[in-house]
Image 1 (tube, rainbow, N blue to C red):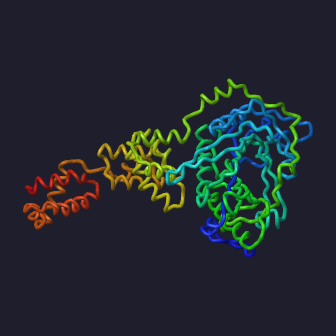
Image 2 (cartoon, rainbow, N blue to C red):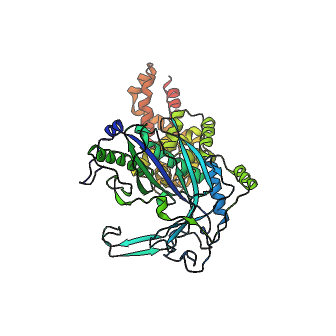
Amino acid sequence: MTAPASETLVDYDEAIGRYDPVLGIEVHVELGTVTKMFDGAPQTFGDAPNTAITPVSLGLPGALPVVNGTAVEYAIRIGLALNCEIAETCRFARKNYFYPDVPKNFQTSQYDEPIAFDGYLDVELEDGEVFRVEIERAHMEEDAGKNTHVGGSGRIQGAEYSLVDYNRAGIPLVEIVTKPITGVGARGPEIARAYVSALRDIFRATGVSEARMERGNVRADINVSLRPSPEAPLGTRTETKNVNSFRSIERAVRYEISRQAGTLDGGGTIIQETRHFHEDTASTSSGRVKSDAEDYRYFPEPDLVPVAPSREWVEEIRASLPELPAVRRKRLQEEWGVSDPEMRDLINAGATELVEATIAAGASAAAARKWWMGELSRTAKNDGVALEDLPVTPAQIGELQQLVDNGRLNDKLARQVLAGVLAGEGSPEEIVTARGLEVVSDEGALEQAVDDALAANPDVVEKIRGGKVQAAGAIVGAVMKATRGQADAGRVREIIMEKAGA
């Protein structure tokens, strides 16, 4: 991590020793509805620019919004999953500011009356410690469009011209805002990462969003401030905008703590501003002076009636919630018979769902864990990709393990078959047939291979007959080599012992 020449970084541990960091995290999640928040335009990804639009998306005069009922339901699902109170009535407001990707010159959001408030989320850290993050509110709003700056560095400064795509304008969002997160100490970066990761899991489990961070379905704004001690008033915060990977969240918190400590140590003051995170240098840079709520001139949206979800409807939604990730993981841990550290390893590797699906495909829990946390985990690390992004499915791993369980493959051959699957050669069964990798189980063929190896190694035979049964390993190795590793090593050893009279 490097800092611009004008900024000084303090060693992270030294910064933590002198200052108490306080975090605040705002997470935006795009809801997976069919249409947008306030109009019938389709919600799409990757379509040609400015094709998924209506007059409402473009903010044209006289175009009136209508609330998407499914988006309201999804917002309530999120609120309930975060242990929030659900408002009996709430309303939308106009958040006034000018950006070229907000064609109305205001964003329809919620301000003083959010749909969900006063919740919390318990997040489990890598060592098993549980940290509670208090939720201030979860409110509904719409997304902005997308600016593309052509020429220069890709930012508006120095660009030759800019293009605006309104396909994203109006996509329904829920923004989840924490209360100040205190008491984080040196674990602030880890807590921030674990919190957003836990939210992502909840979004997926409740079915409200695909929550694909690489597509911008989930974006986090990370607020960081420092104070001299936990008893002191909160310091001035900075807000690093639109951080969209777990690794970047952790690095952004770490950098801001080191940077702010350097500024304070030098007698400077922290400016309340937005900042941009740079993945290549793991650093942040200044954006714009951060506005306070009053600067946006919020006022009630006159074209939308208040939203008043009935208590009966809220309870129906509560009853329909699926098993939430934390509860599900505890259940799976008991079913699979794994220890706390083993379960944390599965979670940290992103393997829980993959193992569960592999078990559903017919593998035992132990075998599923072995494949995903062993061979496949090493492959993912070597290739620099996430485990779930490897070109292999749980169904294929289940099929592969069935071939092992049926005695048609041994471990060595199974790894060769897996390599073929990863290379795109087909299913495990197709690769076994094409490569001729099946275990040699014909007794006559095995006995002939053993006879040949014994004849070629008479000195080893004498050692075996003399009681040095460990010498049989040399004969086993010779047979395995002769059969290209396709013999059943256990059965080969039995035949050797019989023929050597041991």
